[in-house]
Length: 275
Image (cartoon, rainbow, N blue to C red):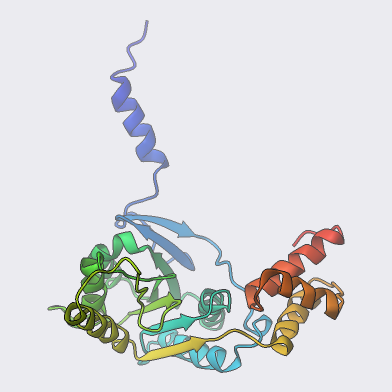
């Protein structure tokens, strides 16, 4: 009988082989996107991004954000970005589309890195790793909100934006999306006194102030909602009835880009098409 060694060691070795690569092993120059979690990196070979012209109802936000990302891709001065406002109105979609557009215009120049809130304390490690790469990066935190138990997370992000001992590498800009302008969800459970509450609000607003570019996304009106539906439907050769689209949104209690996309998915399913 052949001795195959310690079973636990073999299991550990197998898990190590299928785990995402460590930061030092990732190819930071080869891919359009990456996902960072506790020092492990998942390489994204293709960004899930629409073309900019498919994004309707957010024309001003699209122009400003795409230009800021374009500057960063070229190595010019660019701002950190806070995208706040109504859910489903394209904050994350616009960021991905803007990075993809810049990467198409300037191949290999820029990549998007998504990091979760649980890994905020590791931002200095991430910065140290990618600062050595001859490429521009946008580090992205999606749907961020804090409560009073998250003081450490708030400090980590604030320090990463501005205020750390070491200067932030020039090839990195941060983007945060949030439903709240101050990146804050004020919970009803809060029992802090008025002075502590005021201090907390001051800290949260000070964090928001560190973003040079702050863009608000608001619920769309009916015309914009129908324009979003039309843009998606046209891309897949689908026709639709305006009344049907309006009823779809009414049943869900919102008009948004996400709701419009879900309606088009329904249209495609009814037509026997894959999208």
